Image (tube, rainbow, N blue to C red):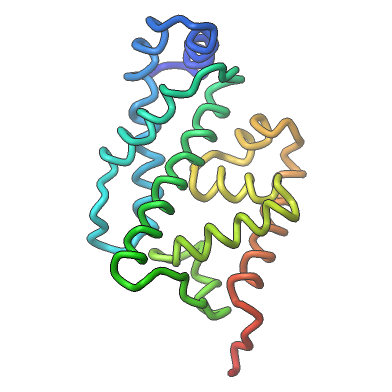
Amino acid sequence: MPTAHEITNLLIAWSEGDREALERLAPLVHSGLHRLARGYLARERPGHILQATALVHEAYLRLIDWENVRWQNRAHFFGVAAQMMRRILVDYAVKQKSDKHGGGAQPVSLAEAAAVFSERNPDLVALDAALDRLAALNSRQSRVIELHFFGGLTLKEIAEVLGVSHGTIKRDLTLAKLWLLAELGGGQDDDA
């Protein structure tokens, strides 16, 4: 099992142009990327056409095309990978909706929004749009949600990536969850 330090050293070497470091890094991060992909796909509807391996490969191909990235550490790499996987799945969901239903996200009730963090199959397009709106208001809170729920990073790892305290991340997570629940509810009343 590779250490975080070993992965960080290879990331730094890769960002300095060492292609051999990338070759040594790939097998070390593969299981972590696969774990991220499984986490994302666990939130998708059953029978989703994309498989974890395909999502990993697509994200990996996009990651290796990045140039001039100064990787800070392992958590930074996985945070970027999580964001990339989210983008891939959202792009896929938008295309599927466009192909099948003429596009457009469906409204989500407050009761349905409560399930975003506990059940499978949230409307990924609506959630992505809500995260984009949250990012416009508070980019760090949006990143905390993305890194924790989609990226599978611990609060400690998120604090490290974002350069803030563990307590700040806990507060951001709580506030962001509340904001998303209200936002995805679309102002609808549960009793209506």
